[in-house]
Amino acid sequence: MSALSKGLSKLAPEHRASLEWFQVRRGQEIRHPGWVDGISLLNAQTGIQKPANWQHALSVKQTLGGTYADVPPEMRADGSWLYKYAMQAANKFGSERSANNALIRCAADRVPVAVVIQTKLGPARYEVLGLGQVTGWGEGFFYLEGYNNSGEIGAQNSFSESPSGYQAITPGDWRKKIMAEIAVRQGSKKFRDAALSDYGHRCALTGCIEPKVLEAAHIVPYMGEDSNKRDNALLLRADLHILFDCEAIWIDPDTLTVKVAKPLKGSDYAELEGMKINLPDGIDTESFRRRLSERDAFLAAKLAKKSDAAKT
Image: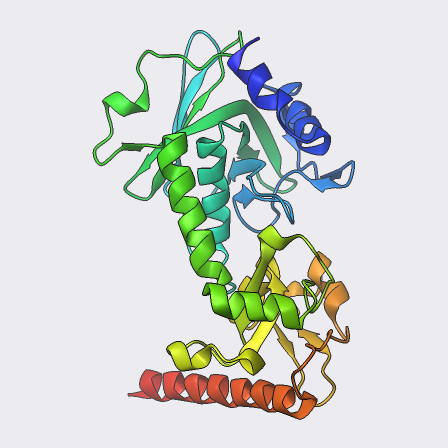
């Protein structure tokens, strides 16, 4: 069994099918694929596509006239290639950590990722480079090596021999780093355990019960151990925690319903608009409303301070 076959065989059916969609079109020029069998194959806004609730990235794309310094791929005679891909920078929702970590997880778990290169604007066309592995990173770039015609990763002329600042990604080391970051993101054990108990081990917005993706968000932003009060916790699915922290979604203190920022109106998250949240057990509703009001006041003061600083 080839390295590519091994990498695909351990994936969930929808993940494997999505990658195989790209593999059978290797070397072809395509239009933007959009959604195929319920999976969005390319990210319409950013370069790294990580479908909702997935741990790994599915694809990366290089666009014409983009702001990133992506380097054209180096093609090999055996059908493989070398590709230097810029790490995703922060956007207004702060999603760069999630997207970049999804590629790191691909490296740590030896999960293939699809690569496409835009060849034409309006209507957009893309060349499917094929499937490859993330083998390392350095100086703000990921380094990917494509599978050759036999489904193997070539050993010659690899990135590990050339780029300055290159660091190979090894499964053991990076898995430890990823798990450490997840632990920090989920909150201190005491704070998170209390939130899990108060919210019945369910996301306050979606009802998700998968413990690995449930995180204890701070309603009033974290400013030290005193912030870890039970009435200041909101149990959220990991992606919603990011959006909540970045003010892309918020909760109205009066109606206790979800509000969604305008940039998300055309996304899957738009369905959260107006949703009534699940209140925590054992926490007085008025105390909960007060925390939400404190958060609004905190963020308003932060915005005003930023505005004043910009004027000086």
